[in-house]
Image 1 (cartoon, helix red, strand yellow):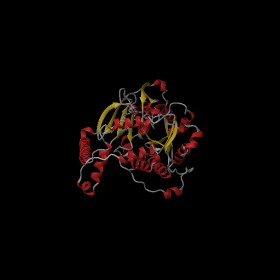
Image 2: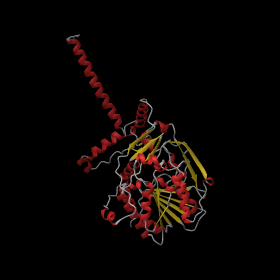
Image 3: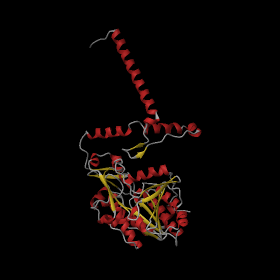
Image 4: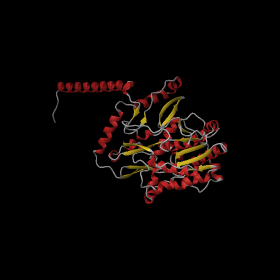
Length: 436
């Protein structure tokens, strides 16, 4: 074994000291650069979300320590070149080998048994749920969407889990709205099936979860003076068609068309044919599932967005924080980011929006209370009403009952994806909006 002289040991220790000082200095420089606001992103294109905002300083948050915790969260969530590093990390992971064709992500959710009808016992057991704020609501919706995913050949399918408490809160909210608006506004319920409804029966049995058909029937059978808009059977019958995106949790405009047809049948409207609309087609769309999973199979087989412009008008006005902006019902998003395809519909998820049909002046109107699944359904309504309104239930400052009475709204459509409204917080928010 070689022995070092005293002088050599001193030189080695000196080099080690230089290395430690240099490494520590580099870390300080990186920290200071990372702390600069203009180097830190506010949104993530890859993850398709807004990143944590820098917290506002208050004396109470300073004293209880929450301010420093929020700064730490902001710092870790907004590091410079975030999307670049995430993409590099995902590409590096793919070097390990070929990704699996079929797999499950999450899915450890306890579903309630679906009853055939509401009972007095469920009424007694029902607890008052907490209504979340808009930030918590967004998190709740996101958690519901990603609660359980079945991946097959580059496409993701959400697994549905029935929740008794949420269902009863939701049903009571719509029944109360129908009672409050009786004689002035007709209340409708559109429950959009989760995209796993297009899978074969055998696959549905294997992946578990709850029966969407039975759950929707429970909602519909429990309504009083609320008119259902059925679509589940049509989805099952036409499941070989392009009704849902592969890389995103939404249904397509082609899927929403079947709900529109059934609504027209119930209302006595003549439904427009798809070929009679002017279409917009946007290739290469990678949606929310891709943002979450980053699968190479999805990236190599992106979605296409088909949108259909209303015949009467393509003009709309949306409102944010009391300020109104002109926009298009179906917007040309050519050249937008690859993750933005679904934003072609009705300006996305706004607090409030209005569409005025110049060809009808009979005072008829429809208000759609919705989340993002309603976006590609709303354009179909424009040709049949004098005015079309929508409110995104997560963000709107308006009370629905008051708005309907004040504006003499003809029809009120409450639209939700069946998986999203299985969350008690979501159902409670709907109940809050539909109460006086």
